Length: 205
Image 1: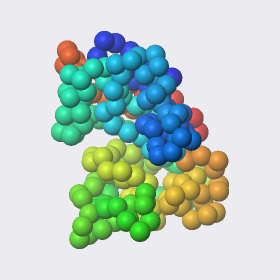
Image 2 (image 1 turned 30 degrees about the vertical axis):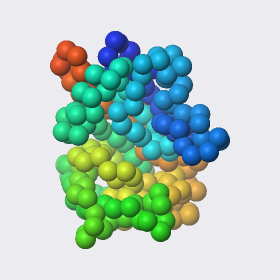
Image 3 (image 1 turned 90 degrees about the vertical axis):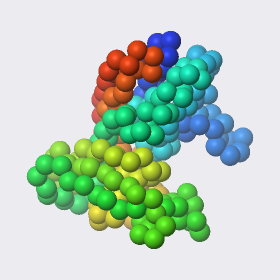
């Protein structure tokens, strides 16, 4: 689970189906943050992954490191790459970009929607890795970090992520027992030394 630990930060490989932080209700108290904090009492949250998403997750150790890493996320100085399998065939050479503003879908929370009036600017870069039978494997780079950004942007593109129970049509949601979205690469500057740090996680699908 913990793939890197030093006095200032932790990098964790999160399984799909586990919350990053506690949810509402006694049945949602088990989470990755609590499991890590049982081993490292000073571990603090700086960002989140969706419960259904697997892959690399960064935590700070202590308040100073948390402030530094939170600022790095806010200033878009943390590089993240994901891999997803989407429904249908996408054909494109090189990196492409989705630039669609996102907002909360208040009547249907926690869902998000594309909202040209009230949405916050949201950008995702993507490129094709390979084609499957009726699917396409993509590499994704979120330029912004909105909640559910990758899932909603790909849905808006007409290619929802396979196994997405929240956004995909029922047949596509049922095509995999899990959401086929994985945080595969993470790079940032160390909160204390400023030195470059880079990590990768093997694809589980």
